[in-house]
Image (cartoon, rainbow, N blue to C red; front, side, top):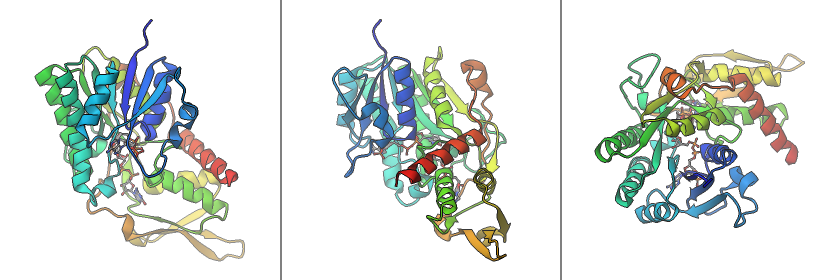
Length: 348
Ligand code: NAP
Ligand code: F7E
């Protein structure tokens, strides 16, 4: 039987690497699009890309979501069955510093892919990586597909634009175009400046006396965290549904950043005590001689002009229609993240 062909924009990112491995296991031929960087950024794909050869089921092309001609030519050449748009300027705090770029890549980038599909008159299916950040200052608890969006960052506004463009092309041109509305998902391959990876990495290093302190921002924000491995399965299932649609993907459980720190400390057997409020909150360790050492403080650099305080998803539609459910618990994920950081430290 002829292999199914998938094209992934954002293949070098966290989800891109998990999705590539997932699709290769399903016997797909996988093409990834990477942008030009001054240094090599394919480390997340080492397992499948280190020795590229003609017979490989995984290949990469250079392209950029800011460049319509590259997108058009790659899609034309590959003629994929499925396109996954995972490419984005995905950091919410940074979107306040580079709002025009964020809009260009996240909002117009999705439009450029959909325009190419339309202009080439392709029958392929399209997945758009939407985000729980679109719910912003939430208007309903928990959030589902019918909850109105209320975005509060340039990142969230750009994702709302891509979400509606996807629906627009689905309805106007009958393209099989679907939106995932994914809540936060993490893994050992998460970018180092997202809060979960930053916390795990720092606390492992503090435990090993390789770092003195961890500086964080808003400790009281709450998130619904899942594992990227479970969430890429949902991305694939969304494109296997009979009809295109929009799906919330979440765990339905919520923790604050402070609670996340507590779980990591418990697993690492770091005995901390919290003190103070707001930006003055600190966590300290007591030495054997009774002396206190502060290991976590807040720093205003890590606060956002407008933060999303509380997110929790209701993924009943995905559970019923896609038969999807999260398999990896927060505790299991944190253990995997800790083990990965320890392995990294041992290599040095
Ligand atoms: P990520 O690790 O930041 O990966 C983003 C990918 O986009 C990287 O491969 C990056 O390339 C690529 N990219 C950035 N700008 C590009 C451009 N101009 N042209 C082409 N490629 C570009 O993000 P992720 O966590 O895997 O998330 C995947 C997608 O889901 C993103 O769209 C994100 O906004 C969305 N999302 C993520 C979450 C989450 O919790 N992870 C939740 C909801 C939605 P480089 O490697 O060169 O930087
Ligand atoms: O922040 C707070 C911060 O950057 C989570 C992206 O994948 O998920 C991600 O966006 C929370 C926020 O993720 C620090 O203020 C405290 O309230 O890990 P984050 P995010 O902003 O939720 C959504 C669903 C996406 O779509 C995005 O692409 O943690 N926080 N202290 C901190 N955050 C960071 N980064 N660094 C801190 O020091």
